[in-house]
Amino acid sequence: MINIGIAIGIAGASALLAAFIVFIIYRSQIGSMKNYKFDLMESARKEGETLKKELILEGKDEAIRIKQKSEDEYNEKLRDIRNSERELQKREGNLERKIESVDQRYDSLQKYDQDLKKKEQDILKRAEEIDKLIDEQQSKLEKIAGLSREEAKQTLKDSLYEKARIEAQVKVKEIKETATLNANKEAKKIIIEAIQRSAADHTSETTVAVVPLPNDQMKGRVIGREGRNIRHFEALTGIELVVDDTPEAVVLSGFDPVRREVARVALEKLIQDGRIHPARIEEMIEKANKEVEESIIQAAEEATMELQLPPFNSEMMHYIGSLKYRTSYGQNILKHSVEVGWLAGLMAAELGMDGQLAKRAGFLHDIGKAIDRNIEGTHALIGGEIARRNKEDKVVINAIESHHEEVEMNNPISALVQAADSISGSRRGARGQTWENYIHRMEKLEEISNSFKGVNKTYAIQAGREVRVLVEESQIDDAASDLLAEDIANRIQSELTYPGQIKVTVLREHRSIGYAK
Image (tube, rainbow, N blue to C red; front, top):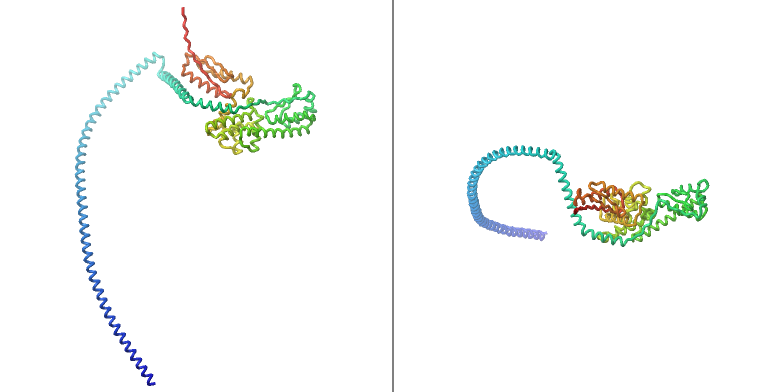
């Protein structure tokens, strides 16, 4: 127990000693730290004073620089102000001198204005005197000429208008001759080449077809008992069957060429078969319909192959083939369409356009004639609607609708198609006409030409393709002759319908005659 107590005492003494030592060490460190803190504060104070002095010196330098700069700017502005004052003084002096000059001019203008007023009064007096003299002279002239002032004005206006009209016509003629000098040669070359390369034959058909009979006894069988065969035949075909005194022949009459062809084929089959009765008539007409439809498609295929065009749809092929049985002035429409297609395509190619598109437009330009007998409207507009329905090119549609100028042309190919149509229809031998129509056209040409003032005689020549007009040389001079030719041509164009073109030639002849005695 004693040993334990001693040990505890020794341990406590050791602890106290250790604590005392630690206290001594901590106190010494606190003292050194206080000294270090004092040194740092002293050093910072000294550095702060040094920095303060430096900043004060820099501020003084900057203030001196700012002051110097401000003084320099002030001096510069002061110089500018003084210069401006001197400039203003100069301007003020100039303004004063100008004001004096203006005052002097104003005084002179006032004097000049007074002089002008006096002169104006003198002029007015003289003008009144002149007006009186003019009135007196006009009165004298009216008495001498026998015309009033308004009549004289109108006469002068008419004279000047006629003179200007003649001079304008002369100028127009010069411009036309200059413009067409080279164009005509090239155009004729292109057209002639196109015509030569597209020569085509034409067949002529009318509104009737004649079917030969083996003998006159066949007429009775065609008519049938109490006319039942002929009535049934006409009801199914829509074509009139004419049985008259013509030996060994009957006539089929109708305006629809396709129906007429069906009736002709059916009647020929009935005559060959010999058995003519209503049931047999129906059978033969059905066969004829099939044969004619096949011939229509075949004709369309041959035409498209001839033109080297891609095939059309079935509806268009039917319309195209139907043109085989249509004629215009004796000209077969399908052959005419092929020719127009060739002409338009060749001319377009020569002019650097789309020849294939022009060929297609020319070929389809009369497509409306396939159904124009069954629908109201002109064949051009009907054809345009057919082409539009079958989704043809806009150029083709416009060419079809505008080739008779019912619709305005909007592309060059339409003009080529119209020209090709005119060439094909007007070339020699392409179309025929009756003698009555021919005589009427010739008489109408001479009548129109003779209706103009100054015309002596008129002769229609070249089968009505040229009109020669003889005029009184005392009434119409050379310039007026050109004007007269244009007026007659315009009148013919507006009043007559004709294929191709008509040339109007005005002849003026002066004859001087003397007699030796």
